[in-house]
Amino acid sequence: MRALAVAIIGLGLAISPRSLAMDDNFKVIVHPSNSITEIDHNFLRDAYLKKAVVWPDGQPIRPVDLPSKVPARGRFTHEVLRKSDSQLKSYWSQQIFSGKGVPPQEADSIKSAIEIVVSTAGAVGYVPFDAAVGEAKVIGIK
Image (tube, rainbow, N blue to C red; front, side, top):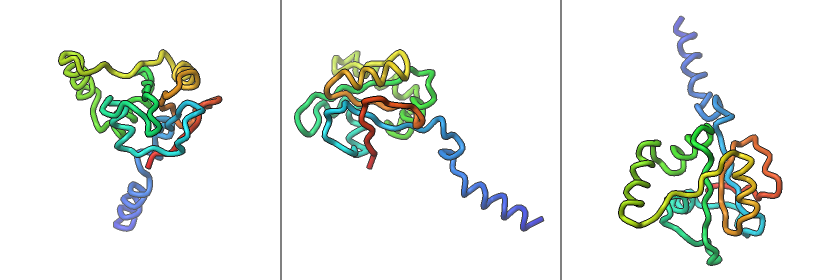
């Protein structure tokens, strides 16, 4: 019985929530002309919170959010922005009220998010890990 408990605990440690929810994972995409191949986690966070507004080459950053119903958005909000949905709503309410900024553009769908990124210089977005991204460029997060 003890060996069974140890095996179950070991199995639980080997399977992370990320591997259990593969469809909730995401990948980051940018406009095809963007020269970066990976993005710093904190820079990506700042871009989506509009604390960073230009790419290293001086191009304006144009973040694109997925619709709130897409599971990858919740995962991105939690893992990259380090906020809950309610914290993010509160953040943007404060930014709007103080005149400091507005939230990123929200796409109508995953397909729409990809189309916006491909057609908008300086755009950055994220999509479910298994989404086909067409001409968008997939970059890593470091």
